[in-house]
Image (cartoon, rainbow, N blue to C red; front, side, top):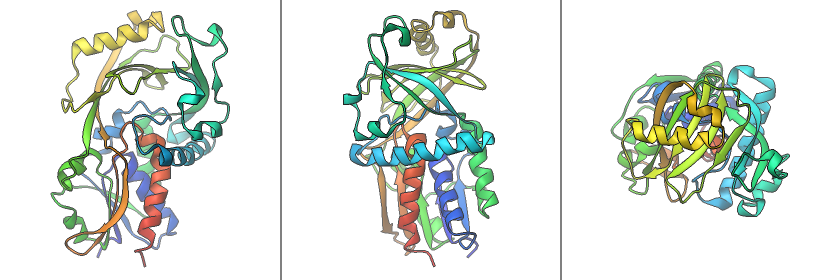
Length: 324
C-alpha cells in the first residue's frame, strides 16, 4: 500500500489531523490527504478565522478542544508568521462570562468590557479578549506545506464510499464535514449557511462580534490582511452558496451601525460558506464494511478553526491504536 493512513477531506480539520498524524509518527507513518476540492475552494477557506467556540456541541468537550487549539494557534502567532495567525484584541458583544462554559476562565485576559469607552455606540455590554485571528487562505497553505515537510501529501480526489480509501490504506480518517451527510449517510449533518462581505478596511484594527446562537443574522467585523470581513448569516438547512445581494446590503448596514465608516467602504468580495453542523461532533472509530478501520472527525459547525488542534489530536490518538 502507498499510504498507511488516508485522511478524507482537505479543509482545516483534515489538514490539521494529517499534520498531527505525520509529525507524531516522525515519518514512520505515510499520511495522504484525499480532497475533492482544492484548499481555496473548501468551506474552511471562506471562514472568518476568529478563534471562539460557536455553534458546536457537546459543550463539555468543546471547551477542552478549544483551549488546546488556542494554545497551538497562540504559539504559531509568535513563531510562524507564514501561518497567517495573529493575536488581535476585540469584543464579543451582549454576553457575560457567566454565559460561557468553564473554558472561559482559562482564556488569558478575557474580561468584561469596561463601560462605554470599550464598547461601540449602542452596545451595552460585552467581553474583551485578545485571541487568534487566522487568515484562512494563508493558514491552509501553511498546513499543507507543514504536512509535506513531515512526509505527507495531498491528492485531489473525490470518493463515493469510505471503502475506496480503505482499499488504499488500512486506516481512514473521515474529515469530510458536510460531505459526511451523503458519504456515510449521516442525516444529523446539516448546513448552516454563512454569507459575508469583504470590504476595504477604513482603519478598523480590532475584531467585533455580536452573534446570538438562536438568530439567523449576526454582526461581525474581522480585520484581515486582505480586507475587513463583515458578516453575517447563520441559516439552518440552507444549501445555497450563491451570494444574495439584499443579504449583503443588510450585512453592511448592520456592521455600519457599529463602524459608521463602513457605509461607504468599497466592496472587494462576496462569499458564502456552509458550516457542517451536527447535534454533536462525531469523533469515534469504527470498522468499515471492507475491513479497514475508520476514525470519524466531523460535525464541527461554526468552530472548525477553534477546535481543530484539539479534535485532531484526539482523532490521532484514536488512530494510533491501529497503527503499526
